[in-house]
Amino acid sequence: MKKFLFIAVIAFGFIFESQAQTVQYKVITSVESIVPMGIGRSRLIEEKDTINAADFTTERTDGKKSKQKDVKRSDAKVDKFAETKLLNFYSIAGINFQNIASNDALTSSKINQLSTEGWELVFVTSGVESDSGKGDGNGIYITRYIFKKVI
Image 1: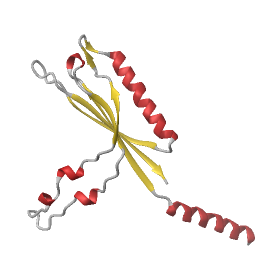
Image 2 (image 1 turned 135 degrees about the horizontal axis):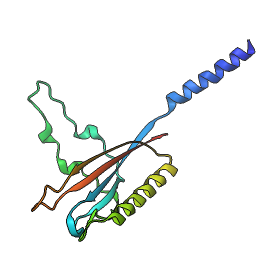
Image 3 (image 1 turned 180 degrees about the horizontal axis):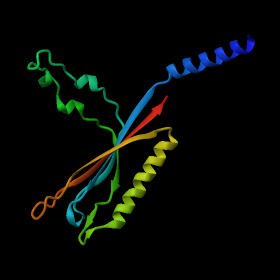
Image 4 (image 1 turned 45 degrees about the vertical axis):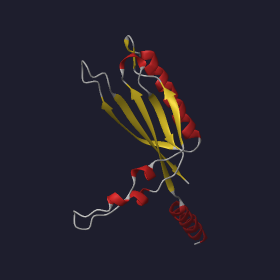
């Protein structure tokens, strides 16, 4: 009976502790330019200000009426963020594989830094707006790294 009681107390402790934990998420975004001749801007961006999405969210009651005009986009901008300079995919000679390897090293360094701070990489998503051919010369490759931390 004592063993059963001891096991029940331990199990209750695990259940209670798991309910007391809070999960926090962080998003890091890399923007890598594919503009030829290195004239684009590539960065790894990390927000340093907190913002409450509820302050910028409205609800429609009949599918038509919205109070979105009461929400100012300028109020949604954060003032504090870190930006790590990345290299562009293209140089004057075309794709620059050394730049790509350098960006991988910088991104890995950032992921490792966040990992030592207790953040776990849980999801990665990316998208491309690429050069559409002669006369365009513009494009970006964007990747979002989503981390979580149990606090």
